[in-house]
Image (cartoon, rainbow, N blue to C red; front, side, top):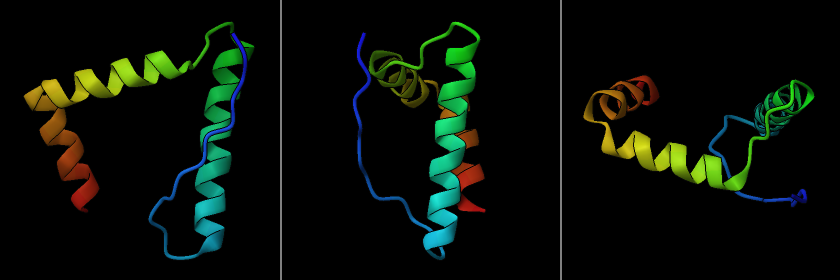
Length: 67
């Protein structure tokens, strides 16, 4: 499996906040990789697909993002 850069926009109050989010996501991926777990594209695709199909979790995430 190879690593690929992906780029996308994220809503933030300023550039520093967006950069902090980027570092946090990279740290999340790296910490799992260091423990032998790959955060792969297919796993992200699968997880987000399942999230949208689970009414309880989808509602909880939606409520969290509203605040």
